[in-house]
Length: 110
Length: 113
Image 1 (cartoon, chains in turn purple, green):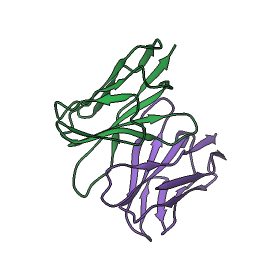
Image 2 (cartoon, one colour):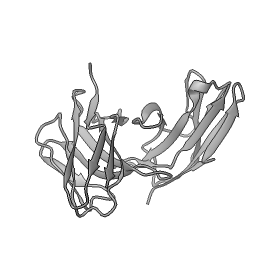
Image 3 (cartoon, one colour):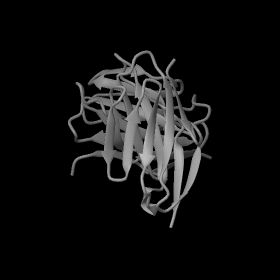
Image 4 (cartoon, helix red, strand yellow):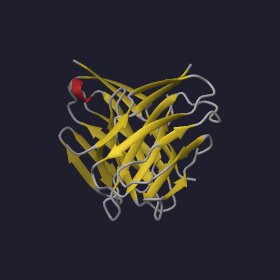
């Protein structure tokens, strides 16, 4: 069974204080690893897909990296508007579903 | 304006009643999904459909039913057999092929009174 564990559960940052979120996964093969951002009471917003170890993707202050066992979401010089819950999900080969972690809730204080 | 719409945004139900949640998309995506989100837990798959008139059970299908009569629509019925229906329900879609990102609607919050 695919498993996804995200840590920490919650992260409180000062504006400008860079940090990283972790997503550890267990899956038989990896078709893709996905990062989403979710604001309270809203649906998740797609951020990145990573397909193979060593791959990196960036979007504004966010950078996602992938190894064979885990992925990191780095937040550089965060702003209050980066406050959200960040979700990680994996997809196995020949599978249509995503297996999600419980998320990391990030709060950035001005 | 392309996207995924879910209605209603909030839904209240008495115990013993069936309710239907709507999900409509105009993205021309083939596959559609229903997830349930509870506090402190990851999203869990209820049902999914890859093509019209075909759908498969996900990990927690008991107490739920779906239909896929049109490409654009994938309604979810929460039946009285679902023991803990209070949750946030999310609909998602994806293209088939190599780009398999799932895109989510705004969600429906169901509360059983």
